[in-house]
Image 1 (tube, rainbow, N blue to C red):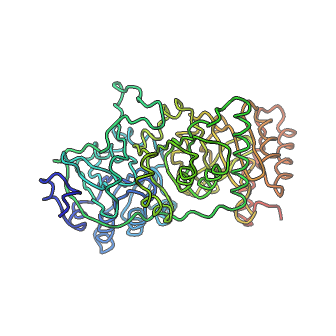
Image 2: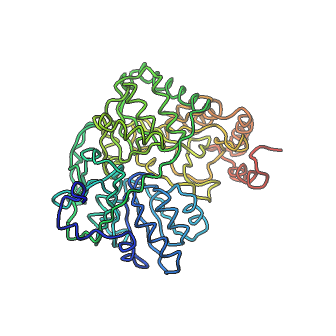
Image 3: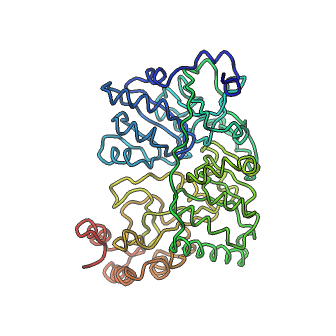
Length: 500
């Protein structure tokens, strides 16, 4: 019945219900799943496991994924109180609440590091890998769906493997993937990838058929997230980015078709990248993690000709568009494991232009991209650090304010440091560009305040800066220790960073 999907005949006997597969999962197990953003993640087995726990069975697992996943996995298991430990990235509201309450121990890890940390033995022995697939080959290998993430290493490292064959995922995805797992030290060799569209691996995940514990047939679609419409602030940020990149070309620091672009995930990142449709740049390439709607826009406009990522991460409309034009998009797109898509060696070799988003930036260039007011986890560092430190250009974009102006995204000192001033080259808001290259902390502070801060907060920031220099004495970095986080304290006490 499923011969086109399960081509190794002796695996037909492994087909079972999601409930039967979930019954194999026991308390205390380490489970690794496919999925990178709400794309290509298992759905039926996690839902069945959540139902068991909700009905009274005591099970708590450690859950490892590629990055964020859909609600059928993160959300359902979090609401069932079935997760004790989670890594490396999430965006689900229920999981976020469980993390911030202390119910779930969350390990926020650079995405490119996770697969090798697992192989090194740092993360424990994985009991099951649960992988969504479009097909199983004659040899028993797994053809992934809309993401690769950590799936290849999870399949390699896990004791047993469960496969969800998802009939809603088109077979025409087959051949889009390029699976390559580096050797571990002391046997590691350079990754033989020198161009965005190079193929260096296999179009499937190698899997020992004897490791397959269950095959579950599903048709649950990816529960993709909506993307906010492009607003005036995003347009201004995008135009400032285009002006900056155009000047880099004019100065001879970039070729006319730029260098491979990397973009973070989410509405702001999508909007900023999408603005390049109206730019003068042609023959663009993309080497990143997530392939959002804006990438389809650039391909359709004839602006982008080579695309590499680890996940198709569109809106609902974008997913329909992707499926409708899949035969055309597959000419341009390669999906890789995140160990390769986010690899520092490759990012530096290709000369990536890294464009990520910030929660807040301070006046010397430190960036917080994870914790609200330094304490409450939002999503995680994701892959931003993989690219930031190794990029040809590391750029952070953010609106100048949030919460209707009550929060300044430019602050005296960030409440949590994810990306240090040593790695951040450029800050862009709707007001302008702060080019921090070759600037001292004092110089960076003036450029960030004058070019990027909102007018409501600019005088406050300059006052802080000038007093930090005056009161601090002989200092390299302007800082008032007793006021560095005073804006966050004022926000906590009054609901606004403004002085009332």
